[in-house]
Image (tube, rainbow, N blue to C red):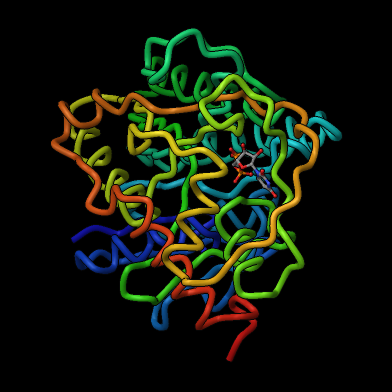
Length: 329
Ligand code: UDP
């Protein structure tokens, strides 16, 4: 049993990782400013430090209260589109503050660090599925900010011996299979929760961002990975840090088009989804599918919830039970 600090632990992916740690008996402290995170996503009995990673005194105080088995860093801005509007905001917040956190971890003797990174490092992939040898060319300032953190961690390893795992997520989706946690963004921009809301009549329709892509049905293809499988992959990667630093691309390895997602939500819910065809969204590559072979072969990880209908079923169940997200009583 270890003790872990999780920045952004009240957010979507972070909270599912916290649950995975608690489920195996670890102790967790969540550090979150609750700008995007939710108090209701922090399990009862888990300490929440409501503070920003910009608050160096706050960070120092928490880190001094060690020892920490590892620090998981999820706290970040995460919208590709917004980063195209506000590049320096993204670089300063994600890269600037993240580097401050890495520095603080080194000063406080932390030896293991797990970074929430992104498939947006691959803005123009040459080969699908995308493995770790793919050329890195960030698709946006958001992706660039994560690359800067990956590089900072490289130097933290070279110079200070900090071991790190850089985990490049593809499309996190679904909810805790036991229904304890789910997805609640404000504003919501992700496909699956938006399609679910359209099915449940909470939105008028789903806008399909382009159906003229070079894919079989003309809509974009993404790799949707169950958030519980993603959380589990963090634990596998953590195990690798006993010996060395690692970098993994993290997805299911199968692609689904926007049309397929809509069809699956209709099948699972038994409801119909009103669809409107809209223009392409800036910065969307046609196909993003992960090659997670390295993670599988090195750690033995494989997804438990690989099927899209199962991912949608869990997301739907949570959304149905929590119409106002964590605001629901
Ligand atoms: N998408 C869409 N309509 C929406 C939201 C998303 O057609 O209202 C598409 C989007 O263009 C992309 C896919 O759904 O091809 C997944 O988008 P999401 O924002 O969920 O994740 P991203 O791939 O951008 O990380």
